[in-house]
Image (cartoon, rainbow, N blue to C red; front, side, top):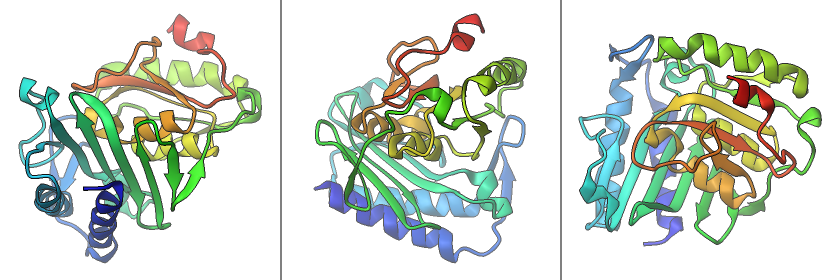
Length: 257
């Protein structure tokens, strides 16, 4: 199995998004936490395809009750998949939404693919081999934060983090050009990786939100940690802070929060 095999699988999954009719919507626990029949369809497709590519791999995904990290997943290979990162965007046709596929080897990120089918942007990385978009090497920006956009997520399913999220965002705004919110963590990290933004943060995201995009960002020269500067766990939910090459230190607004 190669990264090209995973990219092809992501492309086929993206085509399901492109051809989907307005989906049936189901609600999960948490504020505005939705799942659609298309999420479930794409996850089943990904599991079937990826099992054929790497039969010995474990699977961790957002849907179908496969969302708990286990000790077994920390050994050997484990695919961590988000069939549609940005489900609310998908429901309301507010782009983008992406397919995210991360492959862990012995609990560490090994391969990663994030695909935005609406703009046909295929991000990929293999640990130690650089980050790519549509086959071309990418690197994050070397510009200082004051000359870059920042993006953030509001951790919408965790109401207890709402005030803190917006307090950090308020303090971050004068330090950068402006703030953006896309509604998909994987996409935001890829935007930092390719140089569209200088910083992304969110106070709580799930492992399937960051497993692929964090490796892509790191291979593009970014610093990717939790908001306290500690390494991501790759075992479950975490805060996330992704900074481009030009952002040399964690802004004070995170230390004060």
